[in-house]
Image (cartoon, rainbow, N blue to C red; front, side, top):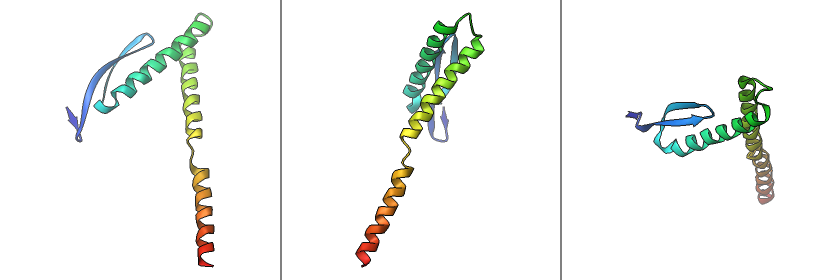
Length: 100
């Protein structure tokens, strides 16, 4: 099946205690599988610690927060805006110096 020229693939992911069928772009299969495994690993880790003391819903939310926190930290590490600002200032200084 093609969607706007993009080949789709139907895969099954096992995440914690659920099998999910998802239709994905073929080139993203590895990312989906790694993402499913990451979710599974994190939920299982929290489940080992909190099973019986927290509800499944709370454990899933803890895993979501863990993943979101990892994502936000990574985005912060990849923020190039401070470098872009510095490069603009340096470029302006160099251009001014060349005009003199």
